[in-house]
Amino acid sequence: MNDNDKNIFITIPVLIDYQVLSKYIGAKLVGEILSNDSNDGDKSNYAMVLDVSIEKSNLEGFDLLLNITLKMLTSLFKNREVKIYFHAALELDNDLQHISLKDFEIDGKTDNRFADKLLETVVNKWMYKKLKKKMFFDLMPIITEKVSSINLELENKLEVKDGVHFIGSLDKVELCKLKAAEKVLWVWISINGIGLLEIEKLEM
Image (cartoon, rainbow, N blue to C red):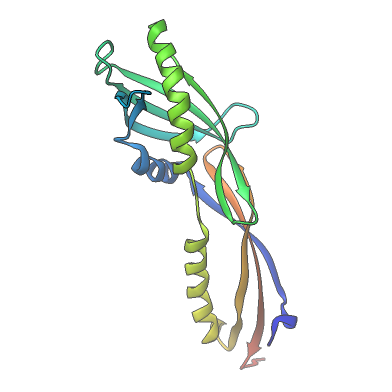
C-alpha cells in the first residue's frame, strides 16, 4: 500500500476534563509571585498564587474560567486572600497545531477600593503575560506517541475477531476544532491513513 491508497478519513473527539486542566495549569501557576519592576530597578511583590481551578466561562466569546486564589503580600493587605476570575478565550493554531490564549477578561473584587485598584493594575499586566505563556497546550507529542503505539499493533495484524485481522497505518494526525462544554474541553482530531481487513477463516 502507498499514499495513493489512503482510505481512512476519520475525525475523533477527545474529551479533556476540567479537573485535568486545573491540575495542569495549577502545577504551572501555584506558588508564582505577582511582582512589578520599577524604573529604578526595585522589585515589588504584590501577591502569591495559592490555588487554581477551571470551569466553563459564562461570558460570551470566552471558553474557560480560571478561579485563582491569591494571597496579598503588600504591607497594607498582607496575608489577605482574594479571588480573581480570569475568563480565557482559546485559539487553535491549525498551522502550528497547538492551543493557546487568544483573549482574556479579569474580574477581581475585595471590600477595599484601593486593593481593587492595585489588583486591577498588577493582575492585568502580570496575568496576561504569565498565562499567555502558561496556557499553552501542545497536545501533538502525546497524540503522536499514542498513534505510534497503535501503528505498531496494526503492523502485526490487529485481530478484530477470530479469523479477521485489520492491517494498516495511521499517518496524518491533526487538531481541527475545539469547544468548551459544560464539564470538559472537546478537541477534535482528524486522522488519515491506510487500512484493510484480512479474512483468514470463513465459517458457515
